[in-house]
Image 1 (cartoon, helix red, strand yellow):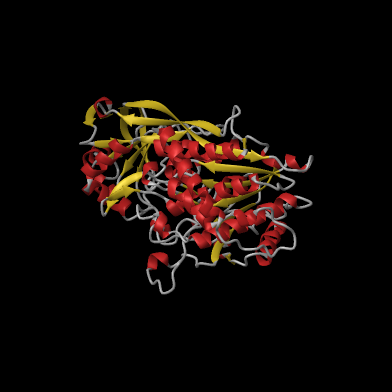
Image 2 (image 1 turned 90 degrees about the horizontal axis):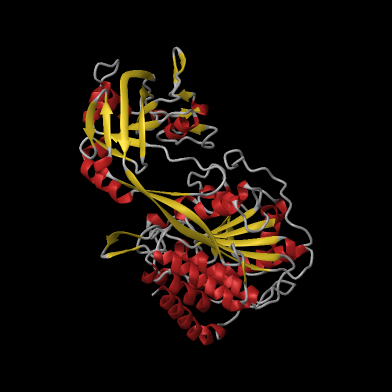
Length: 545
């Protein structure tokens, strides 16, 4: 069935090729030729995206059959055009493993000082098979926020030691930061309780939930059982699973019976986000979480076109997008497939079109690396894996151009508040082009000003951007490795992460202009006399170092 779908997609696209060829072409205004830039057309983009964002791909979740079909389709098209495999073992695929853990309720039990509690009625648990026994420490909301002088582990007697202990923590944020957020960099300026527990040798965490979770206990139970846990093996440092148990009111009361603070007070003060001085409990907790682990493979898709210069071909311009989306979910008006036409079918398609166009020649002096990352929606998994385990030397990637949502436009007169930040038909948000390299920012602007003259919006370059878009797409992992990046983005809209993100809502004329501009930028980068110099240090809150 998978081969049949791929063959059907390729056949349909080939049938459209005469239409694509007849598309009116916009002539380049640059003084130097731009290869075959005018071959990129709205019709071509629509043909590819119609397949990639079809219902048959089932929302391209990581992992899923639909994602694997899309990967094989991308590889088949590159092989047809003569793009060389850039993955592992002479293939277009860079494989890595994920571990899925499924909870076994009948094998999960908690004991407090010898009294047993039952899964479902008394507690919920992460799908992390484990047997743990130890003394408990209550740590309130459990956060450390340095710039607010908040430290849940600091007591009158000093910093409480949680090594080899089981922490008990409220599922709440400190009230001092609820409205404004934490600010700064996670791990340095602020630390959440689970991260702190891992770093300081705790064995596990018992979570006191908020009142809405307690009020909807049965729904929460079903959600935990259905979801399980999925964790990638990203190579290098990869923290082992950490057992987490969510407590019912009955277990909270049992834990805090005859302690210095009652269960009711802990619940109420936790809900308010108030500080409660950490203290050790006179209780020993033993629990077993039963579960089944399975290994599931997934992949990045990578192709390479060698450069035309015998020396500069050892450097690479990386052009990437994430080809996954969020799969199948709760239906809206009967539709539960999250097609992800814009997010990020548009970027996936743009990279494919750029690869096809460069493959026709001529080629720039530097080599071109086309990469489609999986797992972006899960936490930038594919790009993290690639940058930890690159198939070409990471220090030879001179720039990464990341394309994540470029197909939607705000229509004139649109007053929908969810489209407030959506860019217009001749506008695109450009993020990060000036953050690391003055030369890269200048080259990007020069190409655009001499060619299609899109309106580049730099709003999200602000380090204080509350949306934190710089952190939220695959370019971030390249930037952390010192690779200067440009992120092209049309802005969030009413169909973001909804099953209504369909192909018929894409502005293909805009998508054509943005894709051509990215191609032109890659062409200029590929032929530049020198690679863009990294002359700026990322702001501390954006740096991963």
